[in-house]
Image (cartoon, rainbow, N blue to C red; front, side):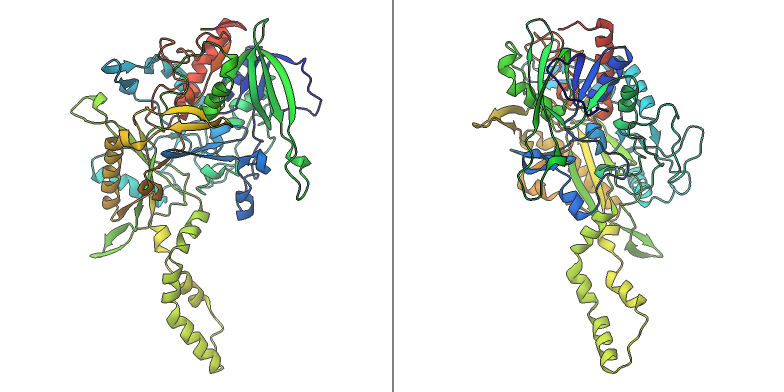
Length: 579
């Protein structure tokens, strides 16, 4: 990590990498391993174990908006037609994603294109990425949820989801996860020490434990069980000599006359904040690099390119196109039940136990053949931390008070008669009730092949990012998801509840993609199949913005595999190259 020494404009690197997520972390490691001088600029801060807030006060401050004195992890965006949530911090989206590692389906490497009146293939194939998928899975220590081992076999949501999917004949699987449930050569266990190489400690220098089954993956794992990028790619990049700078936010860049790029960024210093005073002004910095790699995420990278377009003449007109939310849709199976002893009873789901996601079903696409129709998608069980269960139960507070009325009358009567029952365990338990609403609800997270017809632009005099996207063009796709989710909810003995945003004509995505799409020609894309920006040597994009369409399953693994491919090309080229 960076020392406290002053930064001067004379600093020069072989490569500057903007962002430390699934693209930036991968590229930083591979270039540093190759002996190149590498600087990683990450706008957020590091999050070692036990640093993710859990209190209401801490969570309220855990958002990213330096203009408001906020330097936290969550960065929500609101656009026409959708909301988006991305991350800020060392490790990028890996800090808040749900750990799922699924390869893009081989037949899904194409997109419908109205201009050509058919299917346009992606400029890469599954065969191109398979070796890189293998390497990413190795680096992230991919493991499946050990459902057959105690105590993991007592995970109600996983068992219920599997039974419901099987009863409907759906393609069910426990996918690989970037979570440590066991160490090398060890049996799975909860909360056991993760043994790292003593000569290569993680960059936080903190001990880690195997999964504690707390459902907190999306809030940041305080136990280090989640194999986020700071524990693998970034740690290895650090040991390989990469200069990793946090709270360093890139504002602009431009080509240098003598080749390479000048990068201007600001250093945030939240520690300078004074009580009641405006946020401290960031400190401007400048450095130069032979190669610039943009990996600030779909929203961040596209925004930077749009803001700096005047410095990059001839940039493809495809910039900002082919935006997709990767088909994200959140629904809920609520008040699930089961039949026992001839009676219908509440079915325990316990969504707070386990990692956030343990299972998936895959619904086929017309591209798969075999009689399938429509655009394919995945549905996954989506848990959440126990704190959310408490919030859910607040919706049932009026009913709880009503049920408690007879107990309250008895307690008052006993008090007035001077004969109170001093043992109140049963009464307190009765007030809390069976907590049926929270205990019988299963969130269902869907994603898949929505239509990537969104457009990203700057708007207004302040040049704010805007995304012109609507769910209407993907209405048939979302209808298929809701039908399958409804079938699963019924198979669980419950009913389907939509995300409230759905009734407002909006969706929320945690997987924004596109904006700098890959293509075989400059007319159709911003970058080629190696992430190289057309017309601008040594400028590379390596994140979800390069997707020419939705990945289908969770995109993190594919983003990282593409970054491995891009980095390999950069290493083979040395410090020169271009499209």
